[in-house]
Image (cartoon, rainbow, N blue to C red):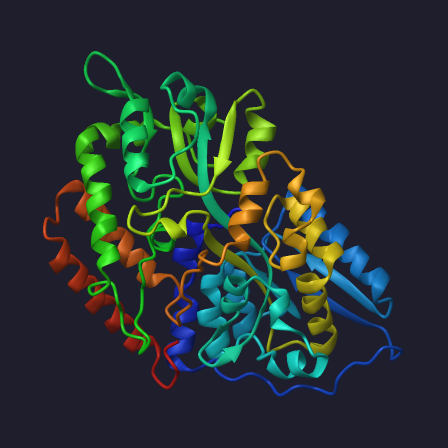
Amino acid sequence: MRPPHNLLRRLLLPVLLCCALLTGCGVAAPDVPLDQPGREPVTITVWSAYSGRELDVFNEVLRRFEQDHPWITVRSVGSQNNDRMVAALRGGPAPDVQWAPQSDLAGVYCPSGGWRDLSHYIERDGLDPGVFVPAAWKATSAGGKRCALPVLGDIYGLYYNKKKLAEAGFTEPPRTMSQLDAYARKLTRRDGQGDIRVAGYAPLTLFYANRPAYEAQLWGAEWFRKDGDSAVSTDPDWRRLLAWRKKLIDWYGYDKLRAFTAGAGAQYSASNAFQTGQLAMMLDGEFRTAFVENEAKELDYGTAPFPAPDDHPQQYGAGAWTVHLAGVTHRSAHPDAAWRLVKWLATSPKAQVALAEGLHNVPTTKAALRSPKLAAIPHFKPFLDMAADPHSKVPPSTPAGVSYQDSMAAFFQQWESGEVQDAGKGLAEQARKIDSFLDQVTIGMERR
């Protein structure tokens, strides 16, 4: 499933206000007695954002859960956006299980009590955290609580047009950022007026998947220090990232590149510039393979890890994670049955492989990542390898949701356009903004 970035930014505000005021979703209800096999049948409800074909895939997997747990009936409700998810936690009709498509939400749901702390269930059932990819497990806790399990994920790497690379004399994809720069320049084609007709790589922020949340992972840049304060002004990798982007953007010409991206097809459409051949290389998630299969079958392309910083070659092979989470809501009347569903979705090999295969997402257990069935999907194996790479990271979860990412994205755009010309001062201002906003929404809570 592709993450709903724009929707998430607009809809998190009610959650943040809820957490800041410590009302509505402030305190989780106590656990009721545990449901046990053989007791009276129970019905639980799970909400997800899935719709159409994706919802059909999800529901088919839920039917397998019911076969394994005949005393539990699962009612699946799709097309649930974050607005409805939040309303349910604050007092509307509530599901037992919620499925969130981005790991950023753990920082909101865990400290607030919107989702139950699963620690005693994990301990009771002897669930071994080692079954999960470390980055995925890390994404399930915030504020001293572990309120979710990882159920799937998206991991971002490099897509490249094999034909165009071959025509330019390249026999393999770039492995370092300096190579990416060189490839981008050689692959770019302009018309007589200097306008871009084919871009080798288009680095403008918020064009397709170009987001600081992912690029920070790929450059090894840290968002926060161990004490919870922002690290964006002190970690030198942020300046390296900014300098690399600005150099390539200036070579294109900001206005020329802006015109190219403005005229490119929408990210999730058949006219996506990579799928039409107007973009030779791009950053994107594993789910793009399904789009190409359905919309651009003749495209000769490859997938690979995104290039690593030249001074961190050991990072080549890593990708940028975002993890899908499942949690038991604090308003669930059947928390043990809900937990059984969450645990099954997260740990059952047949559930993980079926979901990953049907939805074209990566699984979050080490065993499922080794599935021959998933490795056989065209162009998918590199993403499975990236997911298993120890250098792959997940963005930090905070009670402020994705606000720190939004603030940095706005700064990136100002830097790229030339509106901001001093990277050091700009990063220092970003650090102050991030710390200030977190201070406002973490009254009475642990920050991280």
